[in-house]
Amino acid sequence: MTLSRSILAVAFVAVAQHALVQQVRAQDVSMPELDAILAHPKVVNMLDDIKADDERTFAEQKRITEIPAPPFKEKARAEYYQKRMQELGLKDVSIDAEGNVLALRKGSGGGPKLVVSAHLDTVFPEGTDVTVKDKDGAIVAPGIGDDSRGLAALLSLIKAMNENQIATVGDILFVGTVGEEELGNLRGVKALFRDHTDIDGFISIDGLGITRVVNQATGSHRYEFIFKGPGGHSFQEFGLPSATHAMGRAIAKIAELQPPSDPKTTFTVGTVTGGTSVNAIAAEARMAVDMRSNSTDELLKLEARLLELVKEAVADENARWKSDKMSVEAKMIGDRPAGIVPMDSPIVKATQRAVSAVTKGPRPTFAGSSTDSNIAMSLGIPAVTIGGGGEGGNWHSRNEWYKPTNAWYGPQNALLTVLMLTGLDGVTKPALPLRKAAK
Image (cartoon, rainbow, N blue to C red; front, side, top):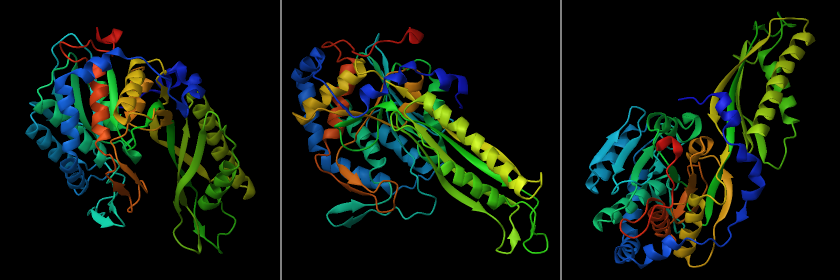
């Protein structure tokens, strides 16, 4: 599904409030529901079970990592994830047409529908060695943290809830999504919200540390530019416009752009290809460009100016050789909308209280990022992205590493957040309101 530009442009007027959440430290928030939840014997047991299950969860994380899930080829991992959800006691488990794994856990009725998700895909191409290795006191493997940890934490949450027969008021839809990374363009969550119009809230488990919470969606537009000219012999037909020269002119112009630092807005020419040989005037050249911003307005301004510069570069190349043979085609290859969830939203408050309860100290900081939550936020659906627990680094590299330091914090935090939002049956009411569209 592709969200229309008009939806993107008006998706969330509150983006103007970006300064309120970028790296803002949370304030003390009263959530009386959590006190009642923490006092419940089953919840005490679940928190203990999650910690006791930490070693098994870590083993699950490593097992998931070694199932390849390159972009657009997540099927093997999806089938494994479906099987694990079924083994943990979920009955209504399926893989949808887009490739997402869906498992509905019904509540007692009358409550909201909350999605809790992690993404199945990695950035690594087919054939990448995904063997997990020990190195310098850490575990190293492509995708070991992003997002194998999120997937394992989600299974730990399901296991604790089902084994303790916990009942919520609202429904929980557990999802393993496809297409979160790279040119997947959030296709999994786009399909999810296209096919399920009754979702009231959304949580993505992505990243590690639980004290960093994403409640702002960094929007991005990605383009491939294809420069085309007549081509020819570098000596005999000298004087014809060159596709690589036109692309070079465009890159030079783009490099001089000065986007605002607040709201943070960025660009990069990520990849370039072109030409046929050293002694040929290039007939074709391509470049891929990434633009990002925490503001929809600024993203659209940057996009408009960049498109102008590319056209100017082509005109300059034609003028240099007194030609009209050079052209450029612009293809949008990525569209991730921006959005924001206000600090006074119940989903943000619940996350704050859960983090403080789990860590018994540090309160979360709130920031912007590009995650599966982008789509929910752009549609005005309350959403956050939270960490799966542990620590790691070298994201999106073959040397990605992970250490299970206090890793159980991740699923514990998710559990408390989920229970506050969906309501613990017979104990608390859901903090997450039903959306008007879902009533």
